[in-house]
Amino acid sequence: MRIDILTVLPGLLHGPFAESIVKRGIEKGLVEVHLHDIRKYTKDKHKRVDDTPFGGAAGMVLAIQPIHDAIQDLQSQRVYNEVIFLTPDGERLAQSRVNQLSLCGNILMICGHYKGIDQRLRDKFVTLEISIGDYVLSGGELAAAVLTDAIVRLVPGVIGDEMSALTDSFQDGLLAPPVYTRPADYQGLKVPEVLLSGDHAKIQKWEEDQALKRTQERRPDLLHG
Ligand code: 6GU
Image (tube, rainbow, N blue to C red; front, side, top):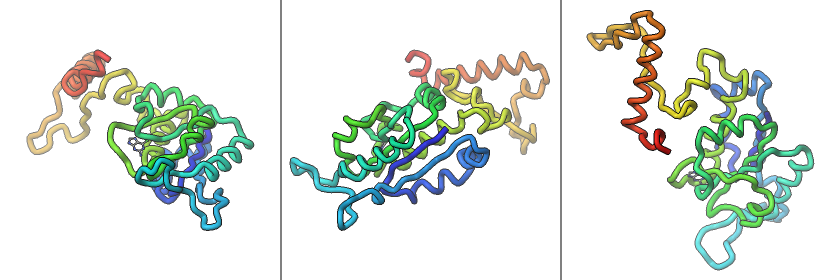
């Protein structure tokens, strides 16, 4: 899988991709993540990438030319399964969408900033608009990092069996059950007896019950949605 990300702040994304799961996926040669600085594509003599909106509203809008040229440059080199714009008015991200995106070969993400990007870019190129929740970030970069992490960890081989993505919260529509590790008794704080019983059927039943209980208590919308 290859993910290309268009941004005016590539520095915001170096950290998240240089650690942990995404780093491992890249090192294993299973994923490529390429950051592209939108400013590199501007033809403006002052290197500007934004401008004031028509109509006189406050704030700045990322202009059409640099992003248009960047997308055309990238699309001339490969076909993208999805061109995703990260925006608070997009579809709210859920695991089902992440699962679908993890099957893609090539994904192009566009990070907005300020008041967003010129609508004509969205109309012409964008196939999917994603929000990571009902709150406002300063730009799409952190959302792109979240989306990339969620996708990359599902690419076969990126995480080992010891962390199997299939047992994640949400993957079966339920939250994950509580987990414990040694010692079984820490200053009187005890691990539930059943987990020490060695009875695998009983343990599995307990974990399923706990997952259901947690979901009922914390996210009943997941059960009825
Ligand atoms: Cl994708 N972008 C911005 N700027 N804010 C957000 C978001 C995205 N998702 C939630 N808030």
